[in-house]
Length: 115
Length: 109
Image (cartoon, rainbow over all chains, first blue to last red; front, top):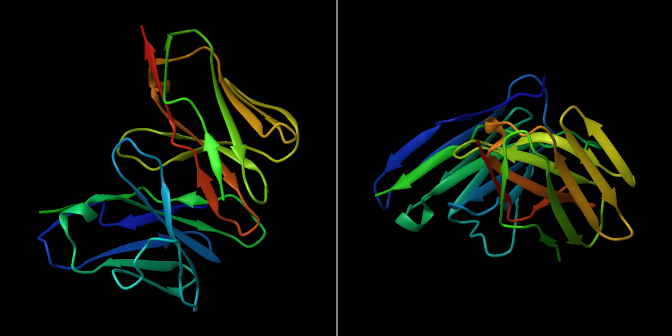
């Protein structure tokens, strides 16, 4: 149980375009979803936390107008990278969690390359 | 704020034991996780400690001392497939995980 999927697994886009990444909890209803970014040889950095039906909470330094997060249901959250630039190229990972459970269940990640 | 430290790299021989230390200073503590991450993949859960002491799970064990802000992950009978990055992460009161930079373990034959 507690499986999280992400789509797409890899995406290449041109500078200036937007890319949407989906995160789904397949066999449970996730109260909260988290979005992380990981640059090569670095650890995961939390970008934002989203709860179903409410606005996402962004970490300091993360541009909310550039990284749009929508958490429309208890099983789906999306991250849209708007007007992508090469420096946005990274590994984006989502995770999902339950209320009163500290464990997070990670998706397989999405490799974004902006050319 | 959160400050989580772990060594950058460790190398060990197949069949040996390696101990990865993690020290932390955090505002709010609700447990410490260890994850394994292979290159290009998402982290996979190894252990969770919230009480002091040692938790053993097969070849992997994890220890926590809350008073010292210290944890370690012990990997026994190392196998080549254990070559990976190991991440220490602390969960705070708001359910957020703060990760250390990760320790890259290389297992040599």
